[in-house]
Length: 465
Ligand code: FCB
Image (tube, rainbow, N blue to C red; front, top):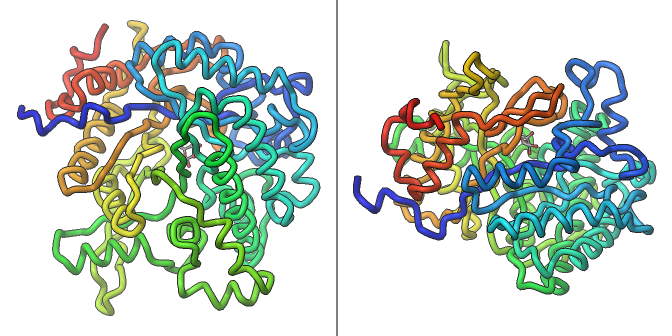
């Protein structure tokens, strides 16, 4: 194995979670209500009637969880702050105990040499503000700015990596368009685009506060997700078709990358959407672009899968449907490792910002076997294949600065409840006992070897303790 097969020595090896999915501690004495608390109460919304009330009890077990991160050898941990834990009504009175939890978590991480990467919003919107119209209310960006200020005041002396928002595509499209995530509304496309405009302003105001108020020099990113094309062959035509799939608007702007990233990085909406915006937004919407387009340091990309694409007859991207028996995760998502190569390339080409893979992983039918181990060879293979593809992007000259596996722990997977296990760490949801899966031990080897071990075929025995 030659040394250029390693990742750079300062490559950030991490794992990610989000607040509602792992925290628990959801009693009114501990935090304000978020829209997921209410959504989980509605019959038929969450598989099995599950809720995030207890989840992985991370608030009570964070010390143990940080020790497990250390055992995996993580250099960084991406987590989110629950807005109504900090501000129970979304604005106004601060919950010192709630804010104190993140204060202690950050200290615990740093004490163990794990860099905190903090996401301000991963979908647990405060119910009190939802009653006032949520993200559709033009004041929502000021609410988010107030919340940002509180978190920055408390944590920016120790936290230097910040994300404003996680996956607007999902919390607008799936939550407010399809109605399958909280709050479960089915807004028209126009209203979703209006909402997105407010969300983008919220991002901009938040980024500006972090930039100007942080006590420690900040690095700011955000973590959208979007459709990604993988060229069927390496012909110029197919590569271009896959690029179009990734940076075009397609049939549904809500799932595009450009609807969100063009305003953030360029201060413009994609050309095809401008006249629509003229019709549905307030007349001076162009002036908002100054707020939206703040300097951003890195592009956090959440990527799980991509579409295989070839050049169609009219030059348009032609999506090739997955073949019979295509490998899939437990969720049913196709396993398409090359998406990390091409997704990183296409998004870097367009936005020219260093890439950090902020989520990538798979759900698997994991359980504790008779020997007390959780063997998940599929996830090991998934990690190796995806990191190989990511390494290829880097060989091709794309600056990729880090990789965060989703997820650290098994957790509450939104509408799927506890039915999808994404963790490197197995959680018994009855006893809350944690078990490192074999993939966690494998990931440790990957980190220790600075990525070099991904080139060897994963050896099951090597992942035993
Ligand atoms: C992403 C979400 C994350 C988790 C993974 C599986 O879309 O950001 O919370 O649900 O998918």
